[in-house]
Every structure is written in C-alpha cells, then in structure tokens.
Amino acid sequence: MIAGIDIAISIAYVLFIVSIGLWTGRRKSRKESAGSKEYFLAGKTLRWPMIGLALFATNISCLHLVSLAQSGFDSGLLNGNFEWMAAFTLILLALFFVPFYIRSGISTLPDFLERRYNKACRDWLAFVSVLSAIIIHIAFSFLAGGIVLETLFGINMYISVIVIALLTGLYTIVGGLKAVVVTETIQSVVLITGAIIITYFSWDKIGGWENTTAVLSKNNSLDKLDMLRPLGDPGGMSWAAVFLGYPVLGIWYWCADQTIVQRTLGAKDENNARVGALFCGFIKILPVFIFVLPGLFAYALYHSNAMDLSSLQYTGADGETTLNTKGIYTLMITQLLPTGLVGILVAALLSGLMSQIAGALNSIATLCSYDLYKRFKPGTTDKKLVQVGKWSAGIALVLSIGLLPLLNQYQSLFEGINDVIAHIAPPITCVFLLGIFWKKASAQSAQYTLWIGSLLGAAVYAINKLNPETVIGKIPFMMMAFYLFCTCVLMQVIFSYAYPVRHTEQSEKLYWRSVWEPLKAKGWRGIGNYKALSVLLLLIMGVLYWTFR
Image (cartoon, rainbow, N blue to C red):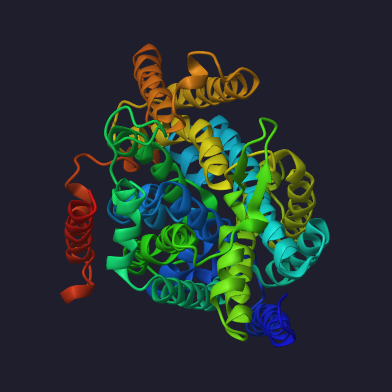
C-alpha cells in the first residue's frame, strides 16, 4: 500500500505541472496577441536544449517506462534497439529534413507535402497524422497510465484516465506549444531522475553487474544481454529485422510525424532545430540503461528469490501458472523503493503520461486548424484557427478514451504500438524519402502511393488480426514494415514514370541535388557544430552496438 506522503508528492507534482502550463499560457497571452503562429509554433522562439528535451518527453511516455521494463524482464535488452536506433534517424532529421522544414517556413508536415507534391497528399497525410496521434500517442499512453494508477492506488482505470486527460488538456489547450514545451522540459528532468532512481535501487538490490550475469548464466539466459539476435530469432527481432525494419518505422516517427517534428518547427533558427534534434539523439542512449535494464534486474531478482511476483501470477486455461509481466514496473516501485521515493517515481510516470498526451494534443490542434479547417476556409482569422484547434484537441481526448477497451487486448503494449506503426509508416516514409532525394518523384505518384500503400497496410493488419495463422500473419511486424516499404518504393517509382513530374516553383526547391548539399551549411563553431555532433553520435552508437552485439 502506498504511504500518504507518496500520494501527497504525486498530487503536488500534478498540480505543479498544471500551474506551470497555465502560467506559461497566460504570460504568453499578456505579452503577445496569441496569434496562430504563437499558439501552434511557440512564435518560433525555441532553442536547442528545450527542443531536445521536448522531443524526448514527447517520445517517452508512461507506456515506455512500463513496457520497456516488461520487455527487459521478458527478453532482456532486445527492445532497447527501438531506443538506440532512434539516434540514427534523429541524425537524418537534423541533416536532411530539418533544413527543408525550416527554410520553407511550413507550419505542418502536410503543408510540406503540398509544396513538394499536391493538395491530395496534404489532405491524406493530415488525416492519417490525426488518426495516428489519437491512437499511438494518446490512447496507448492513457492505457498504460491507467493500468499503473489502478495497480498503485486502486483507482478505476477510466476514472484516473479521465482526470489526467482533463488536467493535461486544460494547460495544453489554453497554453499552446509554448506551454507544452516548457512543461515537457520539466517533465523530462523528472522522468529521467525517476528512472535513474529505480535503476540504482534495483542494481543495488541484486548486488551489481557480476551477480546479475551470474544469475542469468545459472538460468541459461545470458542471451538477454545481446542487443542483436541471429536470423530466425523466434521473437521476430533478428539483426536483419532491426536494421531493415526499424528505419521504416523510425523515419516516419522521427522525421515525418507531426507530433514529434513540431518541436523543431518552433525552433528559433535552423541551427537550433538541428542541434536540438541531435541533443535528443544523445539522450536516447539512456533508455536502455534506465528503462530496459531495470526490467532485466527484476528478472535476476525474481530468480534469486529477492522479489515477490506472486501477485502477477495467474493460471491459464491449460492449468499452467504464468506471469502477467505488465505489472513488473509497478511491483519494482512498491517493493524496492523507500517511502518518499515512491511518490517521485509515480511523478515520473505521470510526467511520461502527461508530456506524451500534451504533445499529441498540440499537434492535433495544429493539423486540424491548418490542414483541415483552413484548407477549406482559407480566409479564417488567427483567432478562429486557435479556437478550432482547441475544440479539435478536446474531441481527440474523448475519442482516445473510447479506444481503450480495444487496445487493451494487446498482451504487450510496446509491441502493440509498434505493430500499429509498422502498418502505418511505410507509404509515408516512402514519399518523404523519395520526395527529398529524387527529383523525378511526381505528385501523382506520391498521391497514389499514399492511398494504395495505406490501404495495403490496413488490409495486412486486418489479416494478421483476423487470421494470424496465414503466411502473412507469421511474418514479424518489423520485416512486414520493410516489405511494405519496398512495395511502396517500387509503386512510386513506377507511377513516377507513368505520370512524369511537373515541378512548380516551390517544389523545384524542395529536393536535394545530392546527399552532400545539406552539409554545405556551416553551422555553429566548435563542438556545437551539427556536423561534429553527428559524427560524435555515430561513433558512440557504433561503440555501444559493438559492446552489446
């Protein structure tokens, strides 16, 4: 049972974040006229530290803390690939995508697709982006947060989710992107601090790394320390699946998803946007050690009889007793931490939940205002756009809560969210990559690739769920993402020759003549130079993968 002091700390933290968000929004509205650019893009005043921390906070939610610990218990460091591979895609964002986004002065990524291709591409991406933000960024986060709060406090999942939704929606809808980014910066620090605390106490309980490896060796589980698995891995996460499938998911998520990229669109200038993205890449090294590794320590503690998981045991239909490992992180908090620190960890969980939801709501508001409402009513005033955005965010909250019973059917929430992404990402990744690297990518080819590719992804997803025993159903979702991506690339190339490109004055400027062209910008001097930071990050990632291969 959680002590009163821990409950007080958790409540105080939530009230603190809501107050900061409301204060930021009110301060902004007093200083400026709170136009649409100020509301949706923070007046383009964001600097690199805030951008990097906000990117990390928007990405990491309560879902990640809970499910990465679960994956650490179940499969070891394997799912840490989703965190470390993100560093490579953030380098792509900084080097190749950010310059186009900043120089073209866009407010949304669908806006970019219209300038590079046509309005039909913009409309489709806006629709898919809003839908994915509701499902991936909000509903899954609500589900993870609701499960944790129900386990910790005994509060009904839906009641806790509705309360968090109202509080987060309040400061997000009132304050806009500036309020979101300011609160996300605070929440990143709290989240990382809480994760480090649970890592230290679990490491201390097991007695260090040598004891951990000894327990793993005794239970024939040393493979849990390997990041890369051989071909034919039963879990479907071989090294080939990681290096072929993840880029498809990662480029969409980090380079072409409005919820994430919006933080760079609010940058003061191109250098701040680039360095902010790279700063997030360095921070993404941490989750393997502070989110995944604690789950591995819990596995060692359980097999050392130093941790009681009896509350997670259940008897299946076959009479076998198994563990429902979704609750691993919650038990680690209650069994390993002293009074007082439990409250801080709950605050960290709430940080992840609230920051993810806040970021998604702001991007939904931006998309609905600029790419849907203003698209059909071009004369709309800034004041009206802000109102439309606020209403859109409120409706998105209601829809996401309604999806909870459906998404709760996934055994592993982390695999569930990536399974959904694997069927959404391929056509979007394709049209963005070919759009900025291939001069001949035409508007109609992108339009048809988005339409057919999205329908194909939806059909494959439906087949997998309705009849998983088919040949398609047995393909791991990471490899399926790669196959769908290859199909979309082939499709767009064929369509580009069938419907040759006719560049406009705008689209003529929105592709790179060579891969070296984006590197011509000098950037800041010294270690803050985006080229130096990119090389440094690549070297660090190479060393890490060599060490944990």
